[in-house]
Image 1 (cartoon, rainbow, N blue to C red):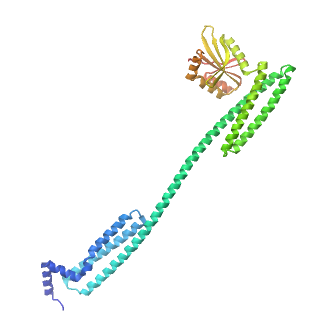
Image 2 (spheres, helix red, strand yellow):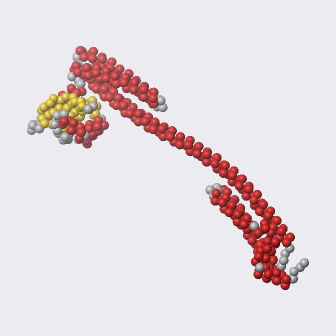
Image 3 (spheres, rainbow, N blue to C red):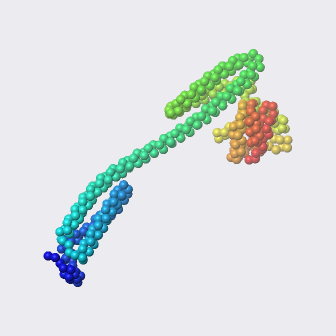
Length: 399
């Protein structure tokens, strides 16, 4: 049954005047499912927004979610356009209900497809969540392993620093031993020259000194062997420390024996370093017009040792103290050490407390020295003299 234009206009007028009838007609024409479509679309939009917010940190899923949301919005726009078209068609003419139901079925199929896609997305997101949890656990385990490695590396660094300090100490001790052996060798050569000038009575002592020279060379060879072992076994620090301690003890005993024997020989003929230094100091005092109030003697206190110390008096009657460091061969390092020691206020106060009056004249008596040592003595204003007299005049130091 066809509608005339007049009837159609009359029906539209009645529908506009009666909203309830208009809603009933819309319910008949569109159906319940199509009327609920905006609500379902709103719910779908909410779900998609929640999914986007929940997995915002997954950058590789953001584009996919955006595409899905855009597809939904496009479908919604298409639906809106179709609804507008339906409204205009209803205003112009009446359309068969069959076409509307076909459109409704298409919409239902699309919604079913959307639901399936959403289910698939949910499964993919669950898989991604599991993978992320596994990655989080693996990262946590890796961090724990890295922390253990960092702790071990810190411990290794501390051990290496300790090893380095110990090796530096050992190197300094070996250098000191080498210097002492060199000084002993030089003094022994001088003694040998002086003993050669004596009568046949000293031949036996000369032979003994030659024997000591051989012993000293053997000790030097042993020292070189120990040094090579020290270089070859750096990684075995514990064994090196034990061997070095044994070597130091043996080396100290041997050096003590050598020094004791040399002192015995030197004391027998007045050739000790201190003896010659006393004679040289007496000659220096004579040149300067000094008089000994307290004769030169050795002084030990608080772990320090002064080879010679004497209280003198000048021609004006002023008393002062002369301190002498005795060396067979003088190098610049010894001059600097003696200068630093003399400039210590505690050192001079201790001397004054022991009864040695100020000012203090700090001297070094050397049998041999290089030009750099003499320049260093002038620079630091430390006195220097030999058996022939004064080479560098010292600067008097007050208490």
